[in-house]
Length: 121
Image (cartoon, rainbow, N blue to C red):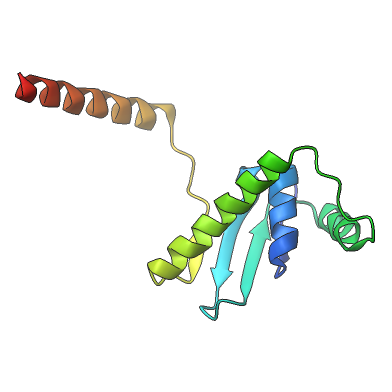
């Protein structure tokens, strides 16, 4: 990691996740009050400070793609909604799995599909 930083600002976490990609969102802590989250990001602290300055400026933040920004907002919102639905207070980015893990999953899925096709006949 280049450096992690934290913020309690939802809008800043969305912007940082938009700029650095979904993999930059490492952790969300929610106190359950529907008001307070704490975001841990794989973003250097000085970059986060600069993003915050731009976000708070009268001109706001220039977006390259409104569609990508909305997708990022939806991504983070779904995580928080899921946390609340399941009564969880912490979400952490899943550990990336090995290629062997994904290959085994694809193989199991293909076998299950073949069984379903066979059962239909």
